[in-house]
Amino acid sequence: MLFSSALFGQTGRYWSNSFNTDASLLSGAVVGGGSGIAAIFYNPSQIADIDYKKFSISANIFSTYIYRYDDALGGGQDYADWDFKIQPRFVAFLLRPKNWENTSIELASFTRDNVYSEIRNRATQQIDIIKSLPGMEEYIGDFYYRMEYEDYWLGIGLAKKYSDKFSFGISAFHSYTVINYDYNIETKAYNIEQPGNGMTEDFYIARFKNVQNIKGYTSRFLFKLGFKYTINDLQLGLNITTPTLAYAGTSKVYREVSVQNINNEQGQPLPNMLATEQQDELVTRFKEPLSISFGATYFRNKNSIYFTAEYFAPIERYNLITDMLPAAFVTNNVIGFKTENWLDYKEQHRGVTNVAIGMRGSLNENIELIGGFRTDFTYTPYSGGGDNKYPAEITTFSLDQYHVTGGAQFKIFKTDIIAGLQYSFSRGNNLKQVANFSDPVEFSSEDRLVLQGERDYSMGIRQNTLSLFLGFTYNIGQPSE
Image (cartoon, rainbow, N blue to C red):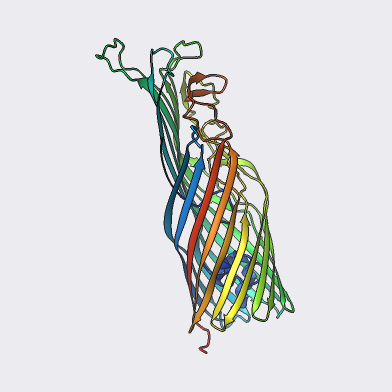
């Protein structure tokens, strides 16, 4: 078996974002205070805490991704791969209008989510699988998976400090999501001995193909309402994020299943099969739910402690992509799967609550140490490959993840520089295999299998990521010391 993969991030989680500001090194535990230039995202009421102009640009210098798949495609084989990625993340500009008392405005552009996953596999063996042929056949199983998903946000936030104790803020965002998705399984078996080498039969090949391809986008709006209240050394924060309001989005979708030269369980030849459909302008709507986050920050001398919890409401099953006429072309449906509204893609999100904690301590007036931990639970846990599901679903290898962060912030004249690391890890066992190329059968009507084996729950996934952060914030209006 040959295996190669390159994976960056995962869809299916809400707290995978890292904006490479000091808020990121606190693991995002900043709804109650301390979000800094990232306030427009975490709690817009904290925009009012900054009383001078700021310009910030943050970059994820690199992330190293290490993935391990145990028995994902049968045969007890374990596969491991690593890669790295470089990506800019967060740019913000904060204004303090002179004529607006205790009011601040922030503009920001950032990548909310970025995923690139690609897996290629080929399994080969010599096996007697074709009932109509004597002797052994060469068997080949190919698996290809690609997921590219990006979510770009452009936003504006406004906040006012009504007193030393209470602030209120609101931010509005435009989100533009794009997806490129491939999920392909192809298997074939052919006679090893060629005509002219003592054989009288012609070259014979049996094939199965299941191909899915999506290329699309969704444009949407969402809003955040933020509140902050101060009691002595304790700051309390509340942030409410509306569900996304999609107003546009289309996808080009192609799907095909074909069967050639296959015999049934009794060795009788089955008619060749083809089911195929392509649509260019299918309505596409990616949704995100209502979320409510609460945070508390305790400031004491040179040290601070941070806590945040956020609840994401569930989303009922909905049409991510909606099929339209004409229907799929289907002939000789020997597998017996449903083809009505064949290009409908469904999705649903379970409710999730994540928590984060952070700590910050000053070594001196110019250096602060920062660290944190957060959960990142998946709202769509991996449940097996998506080729046989009806209605169709987009497959993601999403698992619960945990993030640990640490680093420092340095002050040099009017500039704040943050540098640090984030380690993220996921573990999954007893998962359903993506495919089974190790024990294939020619055809099984009961399990709807063609040139594949029955998938069991022996798959395991290990994901480890190490990211290096670097952030730069220039305090334009801050007085020089």
